[in-house]
Length: 288
Image 1 (cartoon, rainbow, N blue to C red):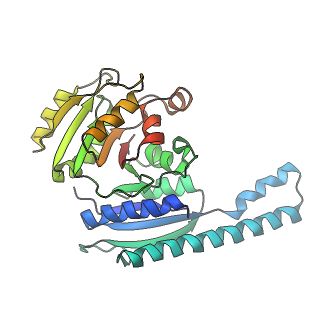
Image 2: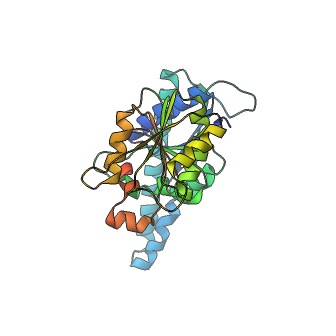
Image 3: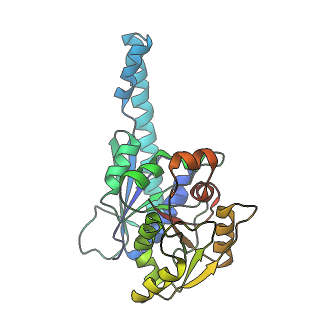
């Protein structure tokens, strides 16, 4: 199935520019529509501070300041979106059936970002999530985890530097889990148009389930010719070995399942998902 609608949560950071470029590239490949979504902070969230001993006047002042700051940020994010659309010649209009050219629209709503993004992502073919700024921890991104855990849809993590291409050389990180099977399903449209596909697997990465050879046979039924390769961890880091193997292939789209182990265990002890989230400089298509 072709990709027709992208969701792009924007917060106005420098990473948002890279995510806009990534989403635009995907939209041009698939003639898709990009909905840029900005979620403004609800000033009413300040109200519970009344229980912290603050007076009504202080809370009202904080709510007013929050609303003003939120409105200013929304204007800045919209200006960033409009500037990008103008510079890249993207037509700004509401999504319409039958349109076969890349288009984009901007939506600003009030609410909790993780809730709104997860809900809106359920009717998007792909959600493009900006990579965090340098020094921030991508594994703690509320928007990313909301899409992964609460939308039932795939998420594309944009690299900090916009890629020159996406999906010409696709890598599937396979470990036999339900999460990796979901990633394969989401990646089928990409693999069908790719010039080369490689399945990466490792003994240290494999879980209970079908092996890489079985996946390659399955892809052949979809008229996708894929080659397999077993990679090795680097310094006992499976994620590092996976990224090196992807780079060695010239990969411009890495597809994988997320959090085969629990999110808490990965955040505390580390894991493949966490390593990829924090270290990848490739577009990464993830499913949970």
